[in-house]
Length: 131
Picture 1 (spheres, helix red, strand yellow):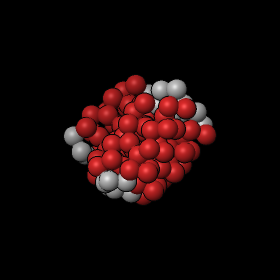
Picture 2 (spheres, helix red, strand yellow):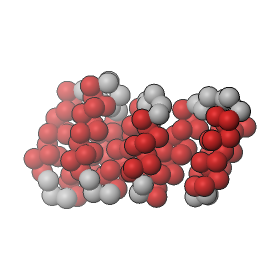
Picture 3 (cartoon, one colour):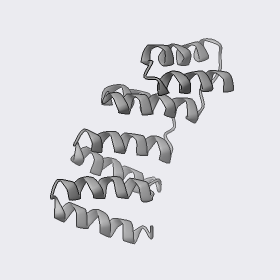
Picture 4 (cartoon, helix red, strand yellow):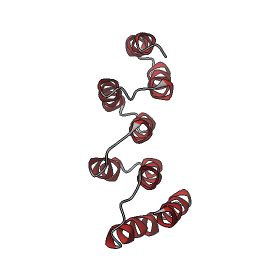
């Protein structure tokens, strides 16, 4: 598992999508279960490429954690899909996975877009979450 995970991470960092995906398939072929680190490397690659469809598809095959949700949230913010980002943050809150990075990513995006009411709502939610 470790060797495949390192390989997937290296391919993903270099933007070699096809190779990273092939390594993940090879892992499954060899009856090995990818870990969250392998999945997150691919999620991060999809986020950098702006491929939300692939990112969501991969998320659906795994048990997401705070890191994987944050990768999705940051990708949505980067693509200016703030309503979806807000919905993702709400899902993270329900699952008790929202953290300072999650709130800050969305706060910054709302503030830059001049969406002051949403900035205030997100800031208030962060305070109530005691971050």
